[in-house]
Length: 257
Image (cartoon, rainbow, N blue to C red; front, side, top):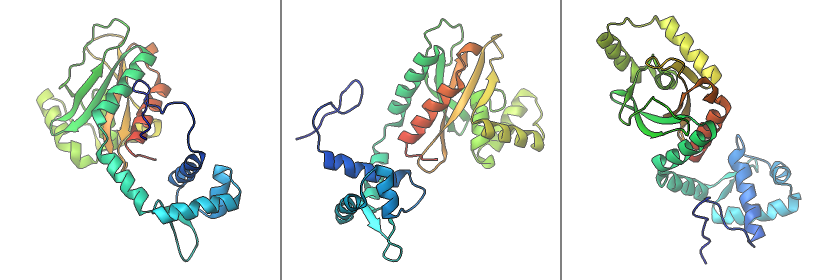
């Protein structure tokens, strides 16, 4: 019998389940969350089981390939089957669908317009927007290319992409605008500050009192996948909520940083 999830919440239905399967799942979750292989005693402590019970579950998980054990050290880790499950799950992730749901949640929480941008050969480009519940005269259009230095979104890509990805784009944009590139030490300090804060801030030049704050989204390899940005009034710049949503979106893509 297939167990269907609630279409509105995405959560499994309430009711009786199979406790042993849930307990085995807790062991797998403990291995996922760990920095490396674990001892039996550590696994038992993390899932709140007696060692003998945890060992019994591990034996079954070993037989299925979901867990592996080092013959020399006796340490347990995720097995080949778990790896294949993870890889298959990643290939089936609809990133834009996940992202739009995250944007809607964030926009509802902060009341401002929320934007998703990804990297392209032209630079940081907007691929999704959710309008805030507050009236706004500012519109961010899908397909807009964001200034790398002049916007919070662009600065996230400067901070988290390899330099060779954006240097040519930055140089071309500066030349078109008749601006000179900032000194290397200024760029490096900006990158350091953004990485320390985990977000980038910016102003909307065309509209007084409008600001923006942006956070990175990472893929399963820890590479920058996108930037999520709030655009609006200063009181709507809820940095903690922005970080929470962007980190949750990263986690759904397989990132465990």
